[in-house]
Length: 136
Length: 181
Image (cartoon, rainbow over all chains, first blue to last red; front, side, top):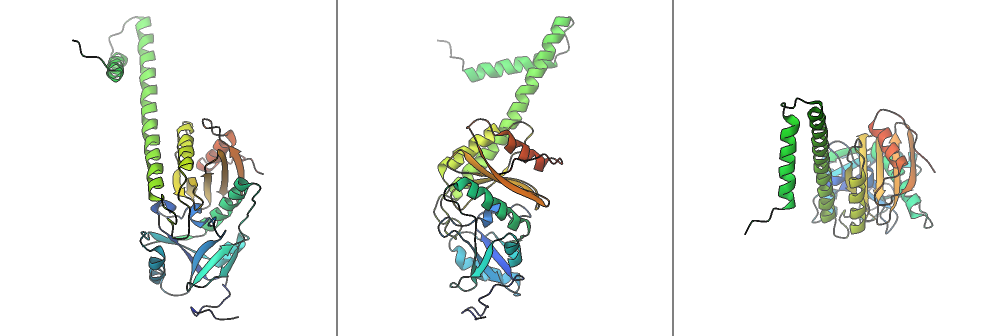
């Protein structure tokens, strides 16, 4: 196993915490993250996340704030890599930027984009069901 | 020259008169009682419609606010597409078409410019309907350990029954079957 510039392993372990930053208050409820927050970008067909190890969760914001830029960083969804893999999706390190990783392997069917979307929403809902909401 | 009487004013006058009649207690004949009951039913129907319209109007306002918040590319800092105005108008049509008894959803932006309409009971019990620029609707649900997805077509005025059944299966305690692919 190689070490990435961030100091993290190039292999994302099942027990690693992943963070998805939320820049819209409509992406979550009072206690839960909504499935749409985990859907992949149509541009690269991946969902970007940040790897977050055993550091205090407050340190997340030091990663999230620069990523959010001028947008308001409302919260983060925190979930284990194994949750993603249990949904038959992949998690892979993808630096730079430091700690960046991606969820890939989303169902993609150019012949029937709506059916593809329905499958994606189902998998996103599975991840959402196991994610914790961390408000700023 | 007499002042023109607006339709709104006429409606208000009619409503006030009807309300007075419906709540009055001076009717003594059978016919008068029947008319009073009919007036009460009409008033109740109007008031229920107004309450419902108010909730739906509020939901539609939330949708429009979401469209404004996500009207720029990369609104999520992860490369999302701006929310498609046709997705918003389709979502508004769905909100308007929701039958009485079906709760209103929460909304969330999706990275491909669609809008998500969510009925969330708990983290493992939810129904999520993805509304985009077309009238084909993608949806998925979690119901404990059961889960699934499907696609349905919305004609602009009537929500497909299996979508309604799916929503009700989540928001009620029952386990109504949902069509699957």
